[in-house]
Every structure is written in structure tokens, then in C-alpha cells.
Image (cartoon, rainbow, N blue to C red; front, side, top):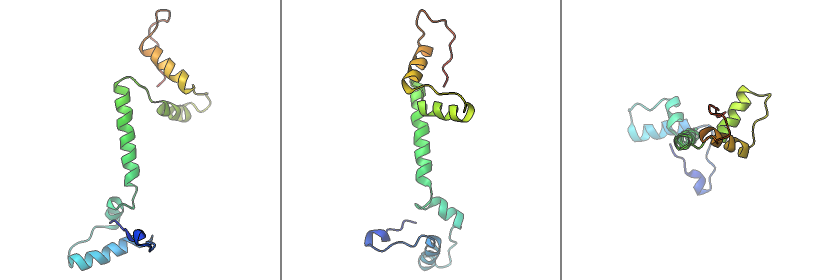
Amino acid sequence: MLDLSHLLGKPAPRGDAYAQYLQQHAVQHGSGQPMSQADFERYSLGSDWLGGLKDAARKVVQTCRLMVGIHDYEYYLQHMRERHPDATPMSRNDFYRYCLEARFPSADRAAGGKCPC
């Protein structure tokens, strides 16, 4: 349920959004079954739906980049923090240079190198 009362200059009560929904539902629908509080929090704009949308968009961008051969430096840093906390990660330039060399090896480099991402 979208609460736009802050646009009118009145602060919206934070904790009782579900109670307001129940009151409005009773007025508008009478004896109809209101959604549960868990469903209300999931579908309301007050929940973290935008965070989920941002995460999905980030994964789509990462997939598109990997499809065209551009590796994700932020994913590499996260991987290094989680799996190799004692190792020093490469700089952004070194990382991209390493990945480019792994994808298109030069004549003087032995084939079979693996990109760290």
C-alpha cells in the first residue's frame, strides 16, 4: 500500500501501515479476506522490493558483460574477500589486463592460462 501522506506535510506513522491497510480494507471491501501481514510487507512499497530489483538488474548486467567477454571486477573483489582473505587482489587495470591476456593470449605467452574471475 502506497502512503503519500508525507507529500501533504503530515508525517506518516511508521509502525502501523498494516493496521491502516486493515482499516481501509474493511471500509472498502467489507467482509473480504485481507492479505496477511507477511504478504502485505512483501508487496508494499515499504518493503525491500527495490533492493531485490536492483540485485536482479545487477545480475542481468553482469550476465550481459560476461556474454561479450567483459569480466566483473566487483565480483572478483567479493570472491577474493570471501575465499582468499589473506591474498591481495589485483588492481582494476591489472585485472582487466590479465583477463584480456587470458582471452586473447599473445604469441610469447604459453596457452592454457586461466582468468581469475
